Length: 160
Image (cartoon, rainbow, N blue to C red):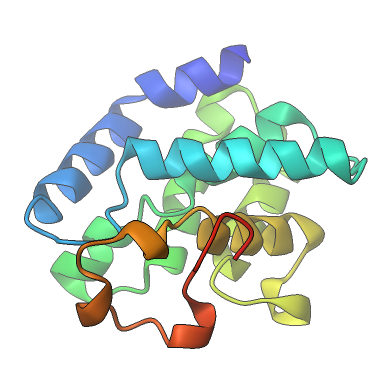
């Protein structure tokens, strides 16, 4: 997972993650910190293994680590975070050794990670959408009452 280590060490990744963590420091729920990014990656990888999906571990981790990185741009400038994140991915991924095809696959997944089904743009995007939603422990969140997620989307246990 050499390329993943390079993403984690990339100056643009570190700068954007630090900005995002600072912007969300006082947020009571659903922070988009490194723990969230890794939770999404690990859940995606479990499903890849369980469902025997043809996706590499580095592709899973790259998509998960980069999928919410654009949230700082959303909070500061109003740019949808999936668009800002996809743009950041296309700057970081080639520099750490991903092929043009892999960059496009990961970019499409990031662009589609807020939508399910055909709107997710790709199987990797659907996987990213599922993991992003499923990794939230809503049943344990002290700010659940203030959350803007509809009740039917909230995770009320480990499997939903």
